[in-house]
Length: 444
Image (cartoon, rainbow, N blue to C red; front, side, top):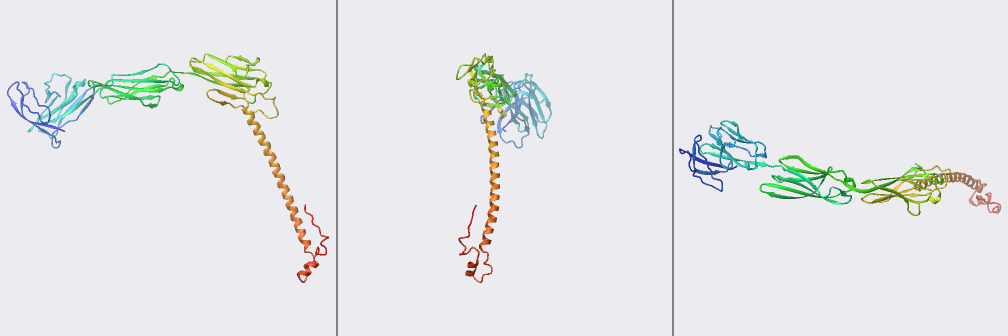
């Protein structure tokens, strides 16, 4: 912190010219004279830049325009020296507890031998600058405090390129924060999601105007969603403005099968379909048509409903529901396949498949799944029976071969147990060389 130290001597004149000197680019020290305040002549000006050992203490002040600022000049180890406060023009605001300056916005808050505290109400940008605390010691001491005045944005406006946007269209939004000090930071949100904009800053005198641009491609899900412009500025909290998006889009179409609720579409049974369409604006026209052929004469169409009282194989085909509004046209398809009258197989459920942009409902999907399920069960049962039969056959054959093999070896060596040598055993053995023609083997 810089310090300005001056030697002072009393001046007997009511008004006197001040002999002053500017050192190192610092302002000249000037002191007005009056009858109530002794006039001092600044004979010598010195600059001190060390904070250690100084008796004067103060702090910088930051205040919002229009509010109250408090400036405090405090003295450590006071020796009853005189304290005074000067404005940025070096005019005395308070000398001890006396205010020579005629600006009534300055009011004395506290005065003692160790402190001079002054408040300034209704602060304006012109009040910004350095305020000087002076202590008349030997040598005199001076310290300054800097007052910074913040100015919040005076106006926050969102300008949207188009009040009503079409789905898939890119729109431009601009948010302007006018006349702030310092310049504001603008943030964008769509709902709870933060977006990135591009900001430009313009300076007029001591004020700043910031404009942020946001380019946004909208969809049907954005209809009714707020776009928020939020300001980050030290002089204000939670300052924001918002605009709700209005997006128009072509209809979204679906085909619902009212009857049969579950199961297959079979010959001789009725079929009832309903087409639902929702868009913005609401669809003005909904119609049914057959894609691959003319609509059968026995088909009854009533608004969004289609009814066939008695299905037959000639009704097979694709039936389409179309809906349109001012934005465009959309459609959904229903693929009808008429099956034979019911059999012993229980009817399965019907599934629906969806494609973009046309929805396709296939009445055949459930039947294929059920037939596959039945076939798998039958095949599994047959395989189990076959495996069981083969296991039984293997057990029977195993037992038979075991018995037959034991009999063969027993008769082959019969009569050889009492032989004296190997040759005699072969000759005496039943079924030997002489009887080889009588021995027969049978294998099953």
